[in-house]
Length: 223
Image 1 (spheres, rainbow, N blue to C red):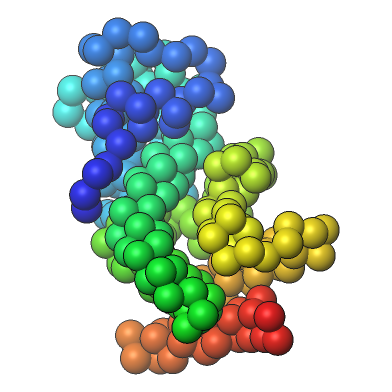
Image 2: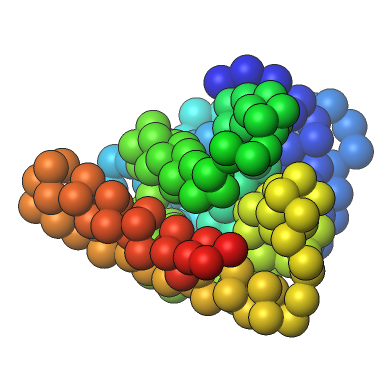
């Protein structure tokens, strides 16, 4: 994955909402180790078995180190989610948005549904590569406050699609468009989760393909 944010910026953003912010390099490394340990455990066992005590037992950590920065397991889950969202946004910007900007030189032939198709495709690839993120994304494991922050007009992934549609494709940013993007985002998230419940990869991919077509018709039909 190219052009990823530095670990300092990722960790600082991840723990911004918690009790204290590590300002020294050693503290930043400790927080990164906590998040890495938790992410590793999420790939090995059910989420309900991942506790602060279990994380603290990982090499190089202690109960004091964990509680210094994270008051509970929810704050760790939220920090992992924030870190992944930052990394995914960077990937989408580099591998999806920038190449698409080059295609806008021929705007009269540009199909806006391509943006949606590639964003969903990139999201599925990211989920495949990061099972810890997949575990916490499906269900109600990420706090409402963190989800709201990730979906905000300035930081959320829907904002990337909004910006592309308004600034690059000339869509008018109206209350109707804002509502449509909110509905599409919520529907897309739930349908992707449903796709991953399918027994085979082939069946999962069929659901993903239908999700792309359904959301494209909803957002771009007649526009």
